[in-house]
Image 1: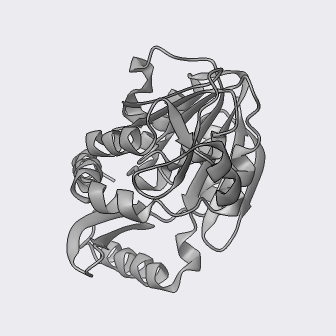
Image 2: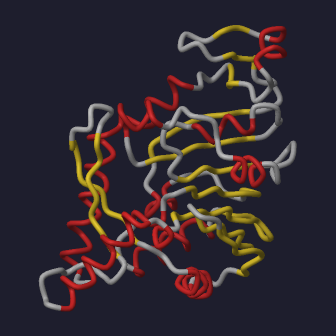
Image 3: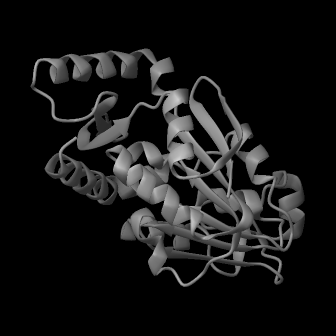
Length: 264
C-alpha cells in the first residue's frame, strides 16, 4: 500500500467514527459477549488496565466489581464524551443481576441499574490515538485491551507501530488482550474481500489484499458513512506479533473473532 492511500484510509477511519458516534453508542450498549467477559476476568484487584480504542466505554462494565486503575482512550472525541456520559466517574454499571443491583444502588437515566464504584478503584476516559500512546503520561500497565481496533488500521507499518506503542505502555511481563474480527467466516464480508482482491489484481484498487470498504447503516437502514476493515488470517496475526517482538501466550478464534493474548 502506498503512503497516500494509507493516509487517506486512516483519515476515513477517524472521520467515520465521528460520523457514526451517536449511532455506534446506541448499538454498542448491548451486553458484552461471554468470551470478552472471560478475558476481562484475568484482571485482578490492584491491577492497572488500559483500554485502547475504548469507544463508548462498554468494556469498563466488566470491571465494575474490581478495585483497579482503569483508563479508556479513544481518538474519537464524540465517543469519549459518550463513555463519560455512560459511565460517570462516581459509578459504573453493575454486572450483577438486576434484582441484586436494585438492592445495592440506583437506577440510571437510561434504565440500567447502577451500583457505586468501589472507592479503591479509579476509572477515567480520555482522548488519545493508538498511534500516539507515547503522549500518555501513564505507563506500566498490567493489562492493555485492544478490542476490535487493529482491523481498522491500514497497512502493516501502522499496525506494527500501534503494537509497539502499546508494548511501551506495558510493565515487564504485562499482557495485551487483543481481538479482531474474523471476517473470512462471514459470507457477506468474504464476497467483499474477494471483490476487492479482484479489483486489486486488475489495477483498480490501491488497498492491500484483505482490505475492504463497507457501508455503515443507521437503524433506519440508511447509509451514513463508509468503514474500512482489514480481514486478518491467523498467520498474519502471528507474523505481526513476532515483528512487534511479543510472545504469543494464546491465539484462538470463533465464528466472529480472533483472540490474542500477548506478553511483553
